[in-house]
Image (cartoon, rainbow, N blue to C red; front, side):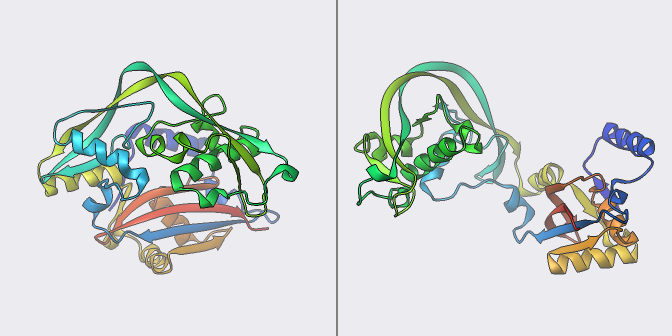
Length: 311
């Protein structure tokens, strides 16, 4: 049996679009001059579904805010931070055999002082011979400088630019506020490599900023592991395939793909590959679609489809 986590409206819309188009997107690269390679990626998830879905912060310095928040909100408390969210929203967490989902709401704002970190590029001829490199700094410090470097060399077009305010990185989290950036790095020069390339002077100034107040709490969703397993299926599994109800060629191709972790074909695609892509609800992918989850033969897989020009 093939089950997809879709709504009836989505199914109806897909049917209409397919009918109007008159052909599947899988046939778009079947001309004699245009060839596309379809790569199906299938990675087995070794953890049980419940453990895979459950959020557990690691032990690095960057996980400190998450640990602090969880210690306060479980089972029924609240934790407020200013300007940053300490936990992923809608994450599933466990406490004393019960399961919860995190929620984050804005509960106000507060004007407060924050250290602002900016960098100024330094010409190579002015870089000291013994300039420290970014990688020689502690991780929280190095991360901030790398974000500012990416922002500078891309003229504000890098993905990390969204983390900045007025071309500055604002120190908010405890591990940032307790780092050397608030102690003795103001005015110092650092370089991105040992040869002094991409060197910057670090400028740190305390400025006022109105910060949103994020209040994190946890809502109980299940009081047993069995009950939570049903929630995990509904929330994370996109497709469920029953081996006994698949056509034999499709089943063999799926299991071959599982054994290899990935499978490729160049257009025109074989019938069994086209049917497998349909069964995985990937028939309308144009370039790439990943991060999906498949439940097959009592095992969880992460899967995706990537389409590239094969000419």
